[in-house]
Image (cartoon, rainbow, N blue to C red; front, top):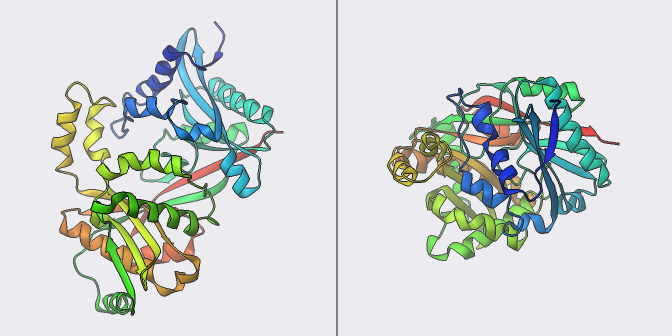
Length: 374
């Protein structure tokens, strides 16, 4: 039989086949962390995930001789296109054998679907957008186990995308940072001077007022990041959907809010690397996965700083330097030996300099690709 590309649509058995593709691609890869299947089903449920209130999507399978050998998805997000005044469709959930014909057919299918909706560009890969996990393709650095929320891929994907005509439009860095209890005197004096600014308070998340503080973080995110490449606004429903799992993941000392004269001006979000605890589950929490997870969770010694932002009018105060310091202090005191700061735009010189100053190692590079579709 010839290669066939099949739309998933509303077929539950096809969706299950779609979700099972990583088990084929990464069956012999000890570094891969399988996503939790129930979470993936919820993400793709258009009746429950508010993302689909402002985004249209489709998923496809590639079959050869009846056997599934790959998959891809595509979406058009109104919020992205309205905010940036562009016509972009995203492609993602890309997984395929080392098969040039299948790769080209999947990418062409996504491209045609995006073009049919009046878009000018396809961009990705991701799951689906920069507001979701797994954004970008790793193209350089250490191909080690990914930390929570970060992508991982076979190295041959880079050639598949570039052969199709996709070109890199933005590089994203991941920095590895060892936690420390002490810093050189010169750096410590700088940190103390910034932290001692009159009216400046950098406090942990108030878990007793979780919804209130989480809303502050959402508002700060939308304000701090609005002009950053890749930003897509979060509305109330999107945020509530994400926040429902946030409370169980967040350590109060890892979600910091910076206030100046009582007004929120910045935040930093770090989470333990739960991939350390879920890797052995192979995507299934049942029947005994929960017990394995709870036992493994106690041994997590790595973390990821996901987001950090300061309002534009306060960015020259050095507040981000102090938030990095306080996060490292908290991590060190909790037995976290190291962590990752990701992703950081390659052209975000100020933040990259801060991380270099703390002795961080830029150890992975991810690339976002795009291509004209008409």
